[in-house]
Image (tube, rainbow, N blue to C red; front, side, top):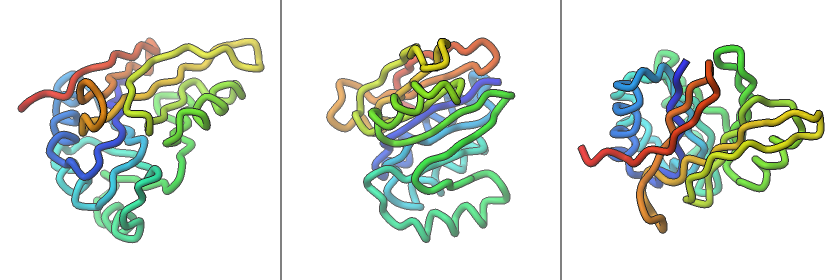
Length: 172
């Protein structure tokens, strides 16, 4: 199962939609948003990709009531989790949080196969040693809006092979 991992769209729905469309074209069957969506209109545009989306809010909260209402009206296409999310996709345990330091701490517990975070606007993929003697993937897709970053980025992940690739947001 391939997934699209995005973060920090900061009300740039068009850029987010481009990521989701690109991921869907590459075989992604779900998406995870690691926060800083800001408004429901951002996700309303993104739902046009038709890709099931799991989202948290981040530190730029916007209007959580509108986000919950949009999720309720999305026919299951959007799941809005609030502050963080504990998911199981393709038999992989995934934790989603906005802050990288919190994400690293959760990766170190060894309770998850993958931890996704955002906030820093810096894309990275790391394999963290955990307290159970194994490793956990920690990924940060950067920012789909390109704010304060050299480029706007997202991550295409493959949960079957546990491979993650940082990709640039398409221009169109």
